[in-house]
Length: 444
Image 1 (cartoon, rainbow, N blue to C red):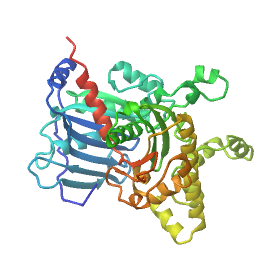
Image 2 (image 1 turned 180 degrees about the horizontal axis):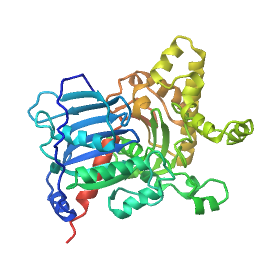
Image 3 (image 1 turned 60 degrees about the vertical axis):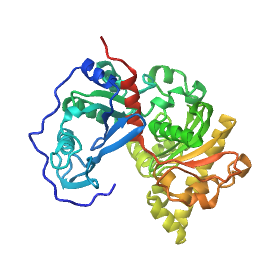
Image 4 (image 1 turned 90 degrees about the horizontal axis):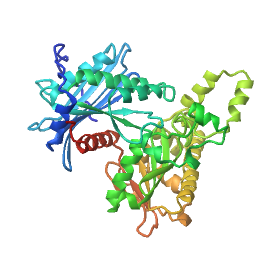
């Protein structure tokens, strides 16, 4: 996002929230088939990311996108890009200063969207639906859900499975119900796409009572990203997703790989938590669990071990940095630690690709997405090195293309296609929200 500093007015403290319209009234309006405005909210413990879309048929227009971060800290930051018909270019706004809490942050978002001088909409009531990213849906949710008291209770039940994320996600829902009271609220769960995993893939080989009584199992994450990448890959290939076997690789600071059989997730690398699986920016990924016992026996506390594995391991632990661009530059300059970290990183990806090819039996395409997957051709090449006999043949020239669009990087004669699909989890949430609210007629 381009974010040049511009002079802007403070958010109007008198901005009005939408009055509740009632579910039947909103659903009737949505059911009319007109294009609608959908706001996507991703609420973190100290941030709110948002995008506003206008969606009609196959057309989607991004009206606004923004991020408020460092909420509750001395130096908060708000950035927003606003589009309005008739304006030659988006209005970019960046403001710095304290942002007391999430309530103030949501107030700023609404004020920015409805600002008469540059906002994307006139009033809150123009937002007809709000789609919320919710990290953990446990086993309750296999698809998006209209937010009601039962859904809120289920999100709360899963606080223990995502103690950092779910409470913040629920706070975002509660605030949106206040500020956009006339809109249908929809929860879209990161874990939902992986609820099609068969028991052989999600059950751990520990006493079965741990699953029955404590819900210890593989859940998987990045579901909206994997689902979006799979849908776009199917469209790129010109085939129904239900006919395709795919491997989707979400490679960012957090990374995961998913095996998709006929459009359904059948295995994924993240487990009970996002710690399992691939080597990541600061997470270890797979490791011998006895390492934890060894460290604890040597006097390292469990909280220190947890912090180490989640925040001080992965690329950061091996080479002291988790910025892929920095590590690639250091490797080119002959830095041995950076070279080793990248080799370990790519080797783990390659091992998972081989395992998931075996699990699927056949694959039609491998899909790279997210920041590293889209923008690091060196990583893609290293991850696929030596897989020619498994049917994965890279075209080096295609692989060096810039990652700002969908494109193929495999050779024409490669039995398994390799694609790069830019990630857009917000759009996937908006599309799932649109599909849900327009597929259900209003209650009588």
